[in-house]
Structures are given as C-alpha cells and as structure tokens.
Amino acid sequence: MSKIFVDACFGKETPYTPVWMMRQAGRYLPEYMEVRKQAGNFLNLCHNPKLAAEVTLQPVDIVGVDAAILFSDILVVPNEMGMKLDFLTGEGPVFEKPIKNQADLDALLGGDEAASKLTYVYDTIKLIKEQLADDKALIGFTGAPWTLATYMIEGEGTKTYNICKKMMYSNPEFLHRILAKVTEVVKIYMEKQIEAGIDVVQIFDSWAAAIEPAKYDEFSWKYMVEIADYLKAKYPHIPIIMFPKGIPAFLDKVYGNFDVFGVDWSTPMGYAKEKLGERYVLQGNMEPCRLYSKEATTECVEALQKIMGGKRHIFNLGHGILPDVPVENAKHFITECHRVSKK
Image (cartoon, rainbow, N blue to C red; front, top):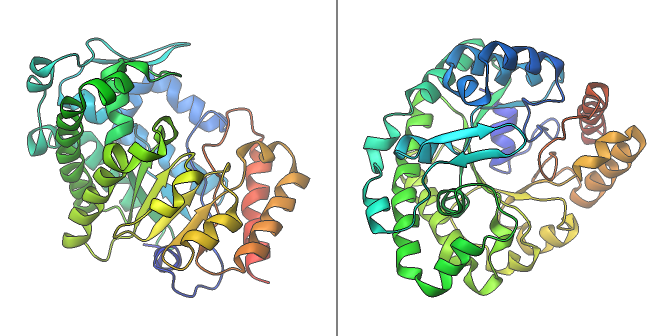
C-alpha cells in the first residue's frame, strides 16, 4: 500500500502532500463511460467485480492520484438489507418500498447477515489489490447511517428531508432504531472491506447539513463515532476519514477516535485548521467547479498550501468531481498539488 498516503493520514512527515479526488471513477472519464456501457446500468457495474475494479483503477492510471477509491455505491448496504433498489435515468436511486413502520424495519436483514451478502464488493477489493501499484493506497467507504437512513425513509433523494425529519421530531425513538440497525450492518461491512484489503476507511455523511446543529450529534455524528470506535479497536493501523458535508457550524462539536477530517468546499480551510488542525489531519477542500479553470485551480491549490504549510493535510476536492470537467484539468490539479507540496 502507499506508505506516503497512509503516513499522511496519521499526520506523519511525508516527501509531499498526497492528493486524491472524490468520485474518482465517473462520467468525466470517457474510459469509464465505455465500461458503463458494457455493464448495462449502474447497479450492474457495482455488482461486477471485474468491471468495478477496472473503473476504480482508471483515475489512478489516467489522472495520477495517490489513492484509489473503491468503485461502489453507498446504497448497496440497504439494498442487501432487503430493500429493492433501482437507479432510474434522470431520477437517480429509488427504493421500491421505503421504511414506514416497525414491521418494515423488522423485515430487513441486520448485522453480519446483511454484510455477508456484499461479496461482490469484497471480491472487487481483492481484484483491485492484485493490480494496484505498491505506491498507491485503496480507500474503502460507506455512507454514514444518517445519510443511508434518509434514502431508506424517503425512498429517494430529497431536497427537504421532510419525511425523515418529521420522524426525527415526532417519533425519534423509531428513527434511532433505524439508525442503530444500519450502524450494526455498516460496522461489519467496513470490517469485511478491511479484511478484503482496503488501506483506508472513509465515512461519508452527504446529508449532514440537513440536521440542525442541536440535533446533529444525536442523529448522525454519534453513530459515525460508534463505527470508528468499533473499527479502531480491531484495526488501529487503518486510518479513518470522516467526511460530513456542509457542517461549518458544527466544528466545535467534532470529537472521536479517527484520523482525518474531510473539509467540504463551503468550510474555510483556515477556520477548520483553527478548530480541528491540532487533533486531526485535514483533507480537502477545493471547490470542485474550480476544475473548469486551470488558473482557478492553481490559485486554490497555492492558497491551501499557504494555509496548511504542507502539514497535516491531504489535498482533495471539497466534494465530488463533476461530469463535464476536462480530463486535462483534473490532471492539472494533481500536478499542481504535487508541485506546491514539494516546495
């Protein structure tokens, strides 16, 4: 595995500051679209270890990042718990039968029973490790229980979160039962990813900003910390990255036994450094749309390097790369990160 990347996650001195990009395999790479056509649809691609391994490795080979991120989807977890999932063109992921009551929750598989059904993910990891260069790390990931639960309750993506937030305020005990069940599956799922060969764990809370600050710890962060505690007790050598999107107002409330805090683009890096830089390595936080301009990219990379001074930092985007970004611009980002970090 990449000693440089893993050392950086633990805050150790490295020859340069490593860089990777969120949503590495994606529509910005023509090579990805060709493989996607072979698979037929997105879910088929997730279920095909050979093809999923191929698209995981594409950004490493083509763009030159320091770490590969496993190609999969956060929603394979509730899918294998027993919720029928479809990815509809123009609509995104849709669950046929969202959770509405205790009977719906009881019908779902939990813990090891659900996690053991995700064999195609573990097989993908093993194939990637056979092909990944020794100087590159492999990042596995999961959605945070809150983010997963929102899809499971709403049935699809949402801008208002009104169904799950109604549950939060009117029936919090039931929401906690959902979150607890998902958490138990995620613990085992990530443990099995580690056993299959991943070098780093990342926990995404894509919908963190949907929760008011007074409720964030209760309904999201504490479950993420529970997962991190479980994994750290068994695998202290595996770095854990926490990435809650859109929570600059919550930084004073961040705690837990993990190694890297992912800073999204809406949070000033200087502010994140002030609040968290002494306790955690920081990752991020370039605005992804800067990739449309090489000049804007260089400006941000140099600013980040000036703020962080090359210490306790991993270059990355502040969220996922967009589908129409020119590949040459993505390569420019990597080149610039390596250039400034070697100064």
